[in-house]
Length: 167
Image 1 (cartoon, rainbow, N blue to C red):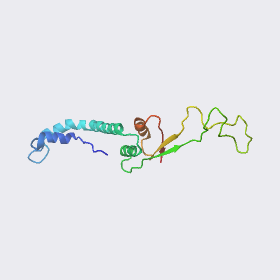
Image 2: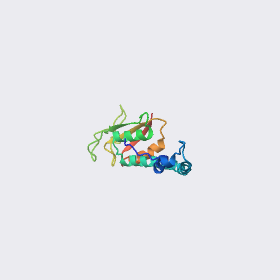
Image 3: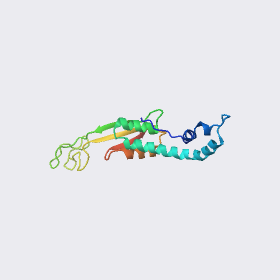
Image 4: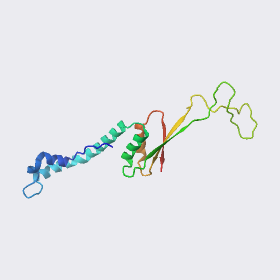
């Protein structure tokens, strides 16, 4: 993952005032520096929250729906220590009749039952998917699922079905 710049208002104030105005001759912080740090310190927490949201938005915007990259981004955002989020993918290819307007090649009826014309059906219907690819995202139970779902909805490609399985 990319390294992100950390901004510390206290350090910036010290670099602006330099040692001459920040530390007095006794080696303690000067009154001017303490006064200014009291004003600036309240801005650090809102900026940290903004910075975290900015980094998350950047990661989401740059992530593609590729299993390796998506796994890395989700682990970085939601399980950065243990890295327990992983993704599996399965493809199902349904058996289907090759013709439509003719008698069905595939018959669907109960075993050992007499076949009738009304029970002869084809496996596929109009406008269904020929193949289906399911993406399963395995996440630990302590992950914030609504936030993870919102992140996935921003990254996912249109038409790809996914499900979240809690492990």
